[in-house]
Length: 385
Ligand code: NDP
Ligand code: MG
Image 1 (cartoon, rainbow, N blue to C red):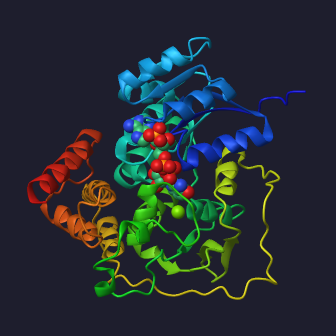
Image 2 (image 1 turned 180 degrees about the vertical axis):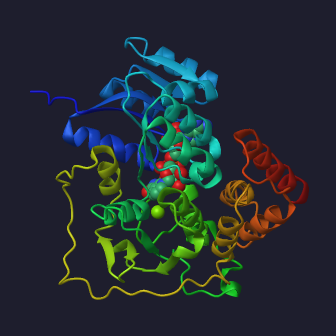
Image 3 (image 1 turned 45 degrees about the horizontal axis):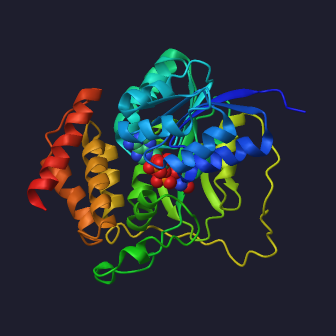
């Protein structure tokens, strides 16, 4: 017998790492209904997802792929759209209660804003949106009375640590990091690292862009900015700690010195399902932490000289305005070039630094100014590299 539907969900980026794990959860519990799905170009997988989950709306980026998909799913009552219009339609699909934002990059800004204005709660994986437009999105969520539920594991951990905290303010957020595949190396040792080495994350299996961001530690920098917006703290209240075993997913310190941590195995399904079913916890099949088998939980300071991207993110976080956009846009382009083997690993932070110095500073940027800064960063990189 079918379970009663408890929530209707739409997903941006359904064919990716977070998107497919979200659909695993839908498959496991059977009480979520998928109303809309959007992907970039993987129409083979998207077709399978449409057949299995029966959304009424689907989107792919390019119109010719959308046309091919329309042909493939002609037998089903699903509308297929394309481009930014398609993403906006999926984001605002009428029946959905919650939108899972699992696309990569600043592309998520406009659909996320549209979803909030349509009254949807947001299960937020797409950190680049909050990094660049958090000053617009957080007040907007409040205005429209929608919840932004973190999917990023560290932010989910912090959110879980805050349950029951009442009005007690946070003194400090202790944001943990695995340190990535190059932890402990010197700058000189990073000179010649290859794409393959950078793609080998020690603990998590994720999409390619975030895996490179973890190797540069820019990911942790983006997460510092993400934490500032989600939890309303100042950058000085955020401390990054390297915890290589990825057992502690982050911690919160209160005024009396009490520290609350969330621990668990490295399984993204936990934060995803916590966001989807909040405040309920559901049975999650899979491995459990066995403390008798853990040889050590170690904590160390990050090396911000070697992993300069993290230091640059703290600077962007502190100075605000459109600097996080300059940092993020430069990083998005630099990572794409590194994935195409066109630049070296250390050129990633170099491009970020150059763009942060180059882009004209705008305080409290509008969406248009954010997108203009993105363009400015892209054009600068194009002209210099
Ligand atoms: P993936 O690269 O695995 O997936 C990206 C998804 O976005 C794919 O479905 C892709 O579609 C889709 N997409 C790409 N371009 C477009 C486009 N133009 N229009 C519509 N859809 C598009 O990324 P992840 O799942 O790893 O990451 C998603 C977000 O979640 C990122 O912001 C990341 O930082 C964040 N995150 C991810 C974690 C993880 O464990 N993976 C952990 C914490 C945060 P297609 O494949 O069809 O091209
Ligand atoms: Mg994370």
